[in-house]
Amino acid sequence: MLPDEEATLRLGAALADGARNGLVLHLIGELGAGKTTLVRGLLGALGHRGRVKSPTYALVEAYDLSRLHLYHFDFYRFKDRSEWLSSGFQEHFGPDALCVVEWPERAGDAIAPPDLELHLVYEGSGREARPQARSPQGEAWLAAASSRWRSS
Image (cartoon, rainbow, N blue to C red; front, side, top):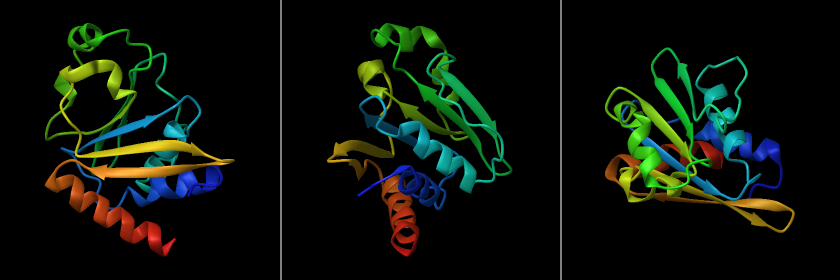
């Protein structure tokens, strides 16, 4: 359960354990569910000290960290999969970057499946996080994050 913003930041920070280039994380949830807040927690735990803004209008924000090249995407404004196909963003998905995608469903089936998918769902006055590993690498990532999350 994520009762407040601080808990969402801690969950993001837990995802720093196991985060590495070559992985893809899909964040799914309604507007205001905490997707960007979670990314802020992840980036902070990875050593980023600057501002973390939602890429809703820019579509992507890039962060070069000591060991990672992280791309934070937001496809909320995509109307259909053709916008993903013409965006040129495919080149960022590969072994040299960690890609975090908000609103991946807006790219349809054109975007590759994630290693880890995280649904943020409103639950009463808070939110619930429902992670699901989609690859062996995602299973390892989720195990590392779960270990840190339980100890926080």
